Image 1 (spheres, helix red, strand yellow):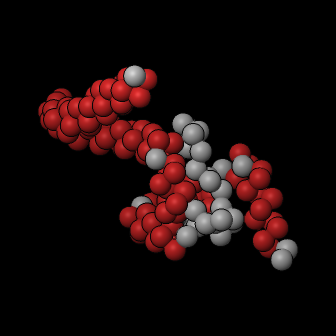
Image 2 (cartoon, one colour):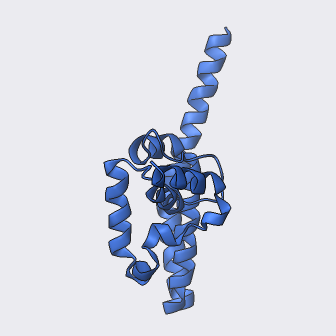
Length: 146
């Protein structure tokens, strides 16, 4: 009986999750139209903030996928920290050679797209304040001394 109850709750939770994701598309399109009509060109700041918020949420929620795709065995793993973006994690790992080939591919794609940060080490590295990550500095120094 407990198995059936768990299965029932799983199906309900899965259904609610799917409904939430399916509603995302019309809600986001409606929001897009409202914001563009209301703010015109000023909407660019709004969408940049939304993109960053989505990035941070995805870094935390999808950390198992990102760790598999982007981070090698020596890298700094994605965590449940809801303040760090995907770009931040890629940037940190770029300093310590902690990226897989796919991670490096994304590093350079983001580097190419965000030309405003080319002089700052690229998009991903510009997201990182190394003083906030002492274990990364330690790893980077260990790699230099090898």
